[in-house]
Image (cartoon, rainbow, N blue to C red; front, side):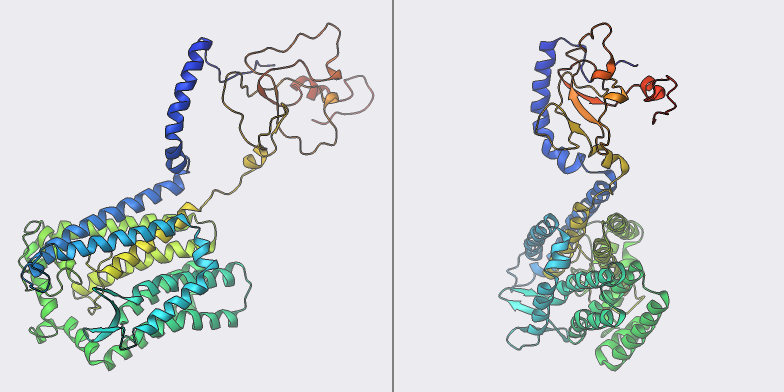
Length: 521
């Protein structure tokens, strides 16, 4: 039988002990890093790190563009203290708050938000959405009531309602499609109450842009949950007809549709902002006029630091800059859906996919509006445009995605179950399946044991750690002593006993003496 192999090096004992102490010191310093990054499978850690890196890059790029696009406006405003960094400072404060909330969300199990507290979150969201209709809290701007005034800051509840709707929809979809604990009628009723009511309240503000973004996100989640495609197409058709009917009925929305089709029909009115955006893209060309050198931000392009910041990016950084922004969001989408793919259950999969879809859809709505492909919606670019509620809610969405990634695990394999059956025979208190403490004398090969010496009927013996190792050798057996009387020799270190030798397994219990019995292999 092959000799037992060990992890023991050929160095001298005192050198090995000193090196072991040094490695233990270095290992203690690396333990947190290894546990956080190196100890996580690549399928989980790689998209998680890419997602966080892309979000940090987009946020830093957004700070730069907000300062560039808003510096002239704030510098020439007495109300803002003639401070060119006024909007940048506020954006930094909002980003710090959003990052803190994102870290808090990411460290908690997503089941806490999507299961245990989802009803409480829904009630709080409904309260905020109803609060904006009160005169004492509502703040009218640009023909809509979407903000709650909080001293020098304003809060837009619809941005946070997006997160609530994703959590509620994921919970209902899992209960209906995966767990199957509710019928179809109950599922539809719950959708109408827990998803329909907040959508209606958002639409009544009116905020058709947010309603459209949420509806598109729900369609993506429904497709991933396994909803029949015929139902999805029916919902899309009804939604498009409903949005067109509401938009054509509203003078403000109808003017935006006309401006999209022909902005030069009213160049100083409804089409002015869109035309100035076209000028910005045309001036930028391929490589742009240079960072900070935009001319349209000199009071020509309204809301250059918010809704139309993508036009400023196109003017200062050109086509290369705009494609770079789109590529960054493409990488974000890949990482988010990769995390959703390896989520442990349908709830996590839908939460990660829904949060990722909402961010990407909001980007496309803004870009398409600035380019004149669809009517302007007033939705900012996530992480890039100025806006407290927007950047806080987007960072919270990222926190939800990271929470799903943090609590994703590999499925248990047959090898995992085999390791759980390991036992230690030296009397220590190590748990079943735990690896022995590293040290000299650890061996991965056990001594051969005759089948007659094995305990019969032990169905859960598995691998067994017995005394032995590299520091000692098996004691010599007296001549004539049969190996059937017990295990061979004694050992002083941890060693895995792999059972009888090949010869004993082939010989069988009958030992070849013609008793007619065949040994079990």
